Image (cartoon, rainbow, N blue to C red; front, side):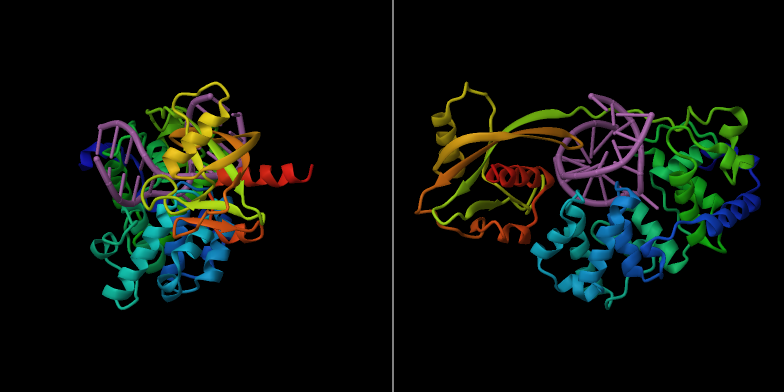
Length: 366
DNA sequence: AAGACGGGGCA
DNA sequence: TGCCCAGTCTT
């Protein structure tokens, strides 16, 4: 494995560590999860930061810690509330896995986040990156924490032409970091690598002239920093047509539905909707029939108030938004509820349905 | 190894 | 539009 990173011999590791860490201690951003090294808070921040930008995470992190200050608070929380805390952040399985995992910590580790790679990696939602991040930042363990930033930085510094889109490549970068990591300050080293990737060694047009380790960088030396990292794979998104309805009863309450516990947007709330596989020309009666047969709701649809388009990483939703009325016989249960406009905010809705609700409120003002 | 899984920011 | 972001889990 180690000969795959043969460029390691060209670098002065100790100087590299010093330049990198010195820069980090001087330039690091003031972030809420850097105020202390509470393993729980480090853990929460690392889960939130998965595939999510720092600026997006900050307000979510502050509110999450406010609502669930300790492992016990999170372990005891209702799922509805943790989903509400995550509403709009995306990748909602992260927070359900996090709650599962803190319960494991309470049961199996006496409420203390484990500090060995073997144990921490068993926790739900803790993969190789997060394990290394928590261990190094909270406990000072010299484990690699290889994320997209680190692969980009290391691919340039060591001129590694492995395709970072392939799962197998991560091991190469982990091995490189094992060789490079500071054993005096693994926390600063790992965070510095990520901070450098976020602030200086960016995906496009890296700021090499401001880089604290440019003199160690083989890509910079050869002027090929813009060719690295190598990353293939294009995601092809498919289109899904939906029709959804704000259905109101006699007293103005609205029908909402809880999504299934698995799959896309699991356990979040939505407005009644059906997928339209074969668009039929404007047949409202046909659509009402479709609502009836597919979700057991018999609405009186009045009109379309607009469309919502929402792009996910792997698909695109195009939602035709209807308003309508619901029969008086409608009864709620665990999955179906009638709620007032003011009660809506207590439930966690994915963004496309937030857009839809906003559209509905605007239609009322006219 | 590939796909599922959110959402927003930026060229 | 397409790419990228402090990735992990399932198939």
